[in-house]
Length: 164
Ligand SMILES: NC(=O)c1ccc[n+]([C@@H]2O[C@H](COP(=O)([O-])OP(=O)(O)OC[C@H]3O[C@@H](n4cnc5c(N)ncnc54)[C@H](OP(=O)(O)O)[C@@H]3O)[C@@H](O)[C@H]2O)c1
Image 1 (spheres, helix red, strand yellow):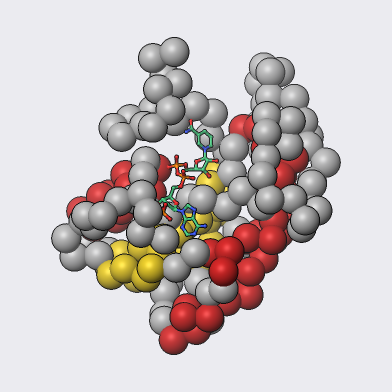
Image 2 (cartoon, rainbow, N blue to C red):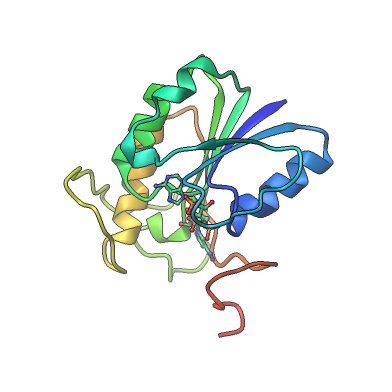
């Protein structure tokens, strides 16, 4: 498959890139080129800030898109509007999208935070992160694959949260 990964050079997207390539998929990374100067061999690279226009996507073609760095609903909307065709879309959301993720036994049917859809918001904090992710999920629509991780652990984790 041809897979477009939004991000792909820090932590989660970096791991996804490695796995996808090892399974023979053709990977394109879209990012600003700020986080990594050296890209994995064999990937196609689109250097772009997702907040500054994604017109360049119109000439591409992908079977699937994995979005690792959407924090605002407007980012999901603009990406989906810019994608050619109808590639499968996976959004990396967060367990924080639930209205109360401290409850035990949550599953996909658990209540989400009220989506925060205010497009004027340009930064988030611990109070708005979850509602914004819930908004991203709403913007992604019913056909998207939504992933709601708890704490992700593994190589290149920039947070150090696992050890903490
Ligand atoms: N870590 C956890 O435990 C945890 C738990 C739950 C959910 N999550 C979710 O997991 C996802 C992945 O997190 P992560 O730490 O791997 O990555 P991240 O910090 O969200 O994203 C980094 C990647 O996105 C690119 N990027 C950032 N802003 C961009 C922009 N404006 N335009 C284009 N590319 C941009 C970066 O490259 P450039 O800087 O070069 O642009 C880099 O490749 C996030 O959505 C997070 O909410 C994480």
